Image (cartoon, rainbow, N blue to C red; front, side, top):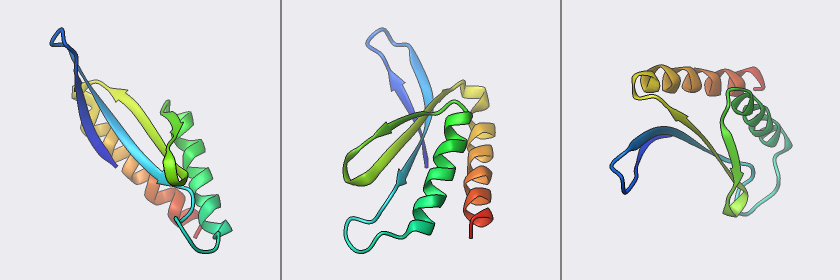
Amino acid sequence: MGVGVRIEASGNHSFFIEILVYLYPASGSLDLKALGKCVALLKELDERGYFLACQDEGCVSCEKTVPAEKLAEEYAAVKSLTEAVILRLA
């Protein structure tokens, strides 16, 4: 999970939060319980307005543009959400 900024040629900028969710390990057996946690988290992030995009190696990039004054609040909320989903499905 991280916070970033995009700066356009015009000088305008936007802040975003990005979360990378790895659906399965690069090698080894598939853990269906862990995959279920990933899918549950992706559903929650989608409902919060995150854009989900498939990347290489079974990774899903989840990104949301957030106003600067809301960055800390959104980061804390998503961190808590992530922990809750993982614990709820433990």
